[in-house]
Every structure is written in C-alpha cells, then in structure tokens.
Amino acid sequence: MDLREEAFYDITTPYGYGGPRISDCKEGAKAELVAAFHHAFEEYCLQENIISEFVRFHPLFTNAQDFESCYELTFRRYTTGTNLKDFDDPIKSEFSRSKQKSVQKALKAGVEYRVIVNPPDLKEFKHLYYETMNRRGAASVYYFDDAYFDGLLKSFGPSIVVVEVVYEGKIIASGLNFAYGKFIHIHLSGTLQEYQDLSSAFVMRYALVLWGKEHGMELIHEGGGLTGKPDDPLYLFKKQFGKNTEFSFYVSYKVWNQKVYDLLCDSVGVDKEHASFPAYRSAPLKLVKE
Image 1: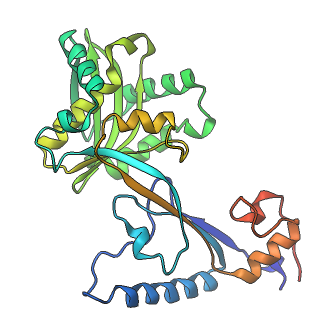
Image 2: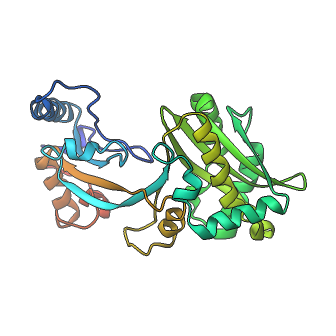
C-alpha cells in the first residue's frame, strides 16, 4: 500500500458536543439499529479513506450510552447547568446563596439588564469578549475572527440570545447564548474588569434564567471545566448556578482502518497506544510506502 497515492483522513466532532444520536426507534430494536449503524458507518469510512474518529458525545442527550457497543467510551468530565423545568424558582433552587445575594446587591445598586434575541450585529459583544480574552491572556484559538461571528449571525440568527448587563447607561458585560428546542447553551461572554464588583457575570445568568423560564425553556447548559478534576475552578464557578444539576460528558477514540493506522504510526515511530489521538499526529508524518 502506497499512502502517497491516496488521500486519507481522520474526523472529529465539531467544536462542542455531538456524536451519533437515535431520534426514533421501535421498542426493543435499539441494539439492532446500533449494530446496523456500526456496519454502515464502518463501510463508509473505509470507502472514504477515513482512518480514525474522535467523538465528543452530548451530555444532555446521553447518546454515549446508546452507542457503547460501537464506541469504547471514556468519561471526560461532568458538566452542569440550571434546571428551569423542575423548579418553580430556579434562582432560589439552583443558584448558590452567595450568588443570589450578589445579584440582589447588584440590582439594588442600579445594575440593569436586557435580553436581545436575533441581534442585528455583535459589535458590542465582540468588544467585551476580546477585552476579556486580552485580560486573561487567552490562547489564540479563543480569538474568534469577524468571519466566525458573521457566520453565527447568518446561520443561527433566530437562535442567538444576547444578554447585556448595563450600569449607568454603559454595557459592562455581555453573553452570547444559543436557544434551540427546550435548551439554552451558554457559548461566550465578556466583562469589563473595572465593574467586577457589580457581579455582572452573575447578573447575566440571572437574566438568562428569567428569560428562559418565561419562554418555556427547560435547561440552561453551562458546560464543564477545563479539566476533569472535581476542584476545577471553572467547573466550580459554573456549579454555583446549577447546584442540583449535573451531566456526564463522554468521548471516544475510534480506529476505523486499523491497517493504515498502524502503518502511519510505524512510519513516524510512535506507539499505537500513545496518549495523543490519533497517535500518528504526535510526530511529523513521512511519505509512507509498504
């Protein structure tokens, strides 16, 4: 096999969560359906020269468990969110007491908020977001360009929900969220550091909860932390808005063409069980001929 004569690929779930999902199935037929999917997708991958796949399963849909006979699951971390469906007062039931007090203090101090659905542009949001990324010394991957935000407006406009926190006529925080079906997904946010004492990040969550509850949404998904550690600072922060709500996030590392996978690993001199996946990407690839 001369790998120089053909193009080969590896695939991954786009940024966020996904994976295969069963939308409808006859009772008792799930195992048969998953087996049929496995066979069909394996054939597709071989035909299209897809070597391997990295899957991020969706924690809300629990689709990982449906496909555990097809994919070997790896627990990555817990995610959290605010349950709007099961609590008459999600603020009281899901927010930590300290965050409830902080929000009330901010509102009494004159902090206001507004919720904008399908915004005409994201100019104000981008300003706050980039300032926050600069302050935190964020990696370049988090500096989404104008084309990215323009694409969001074009593709998901009616599903975009922007929350702006205002103090004395000035926007001091802004959050970009997606509302689809019964779920709200928190995506990105930005704040002005000089107004941190006004708890603008907490007020954003408060406003989104009120809007979501009013519009019949069932859950605001916060996501997880940067690591799977139970004391991850980002996760603990998010948990303060979902103290009763938790989901399991699974991933899977799947090799669909073992022969080519092994050949590529051998060509760059890496162990097939290397911590990185796919292993052959952990070192520069060479032209390979078997």
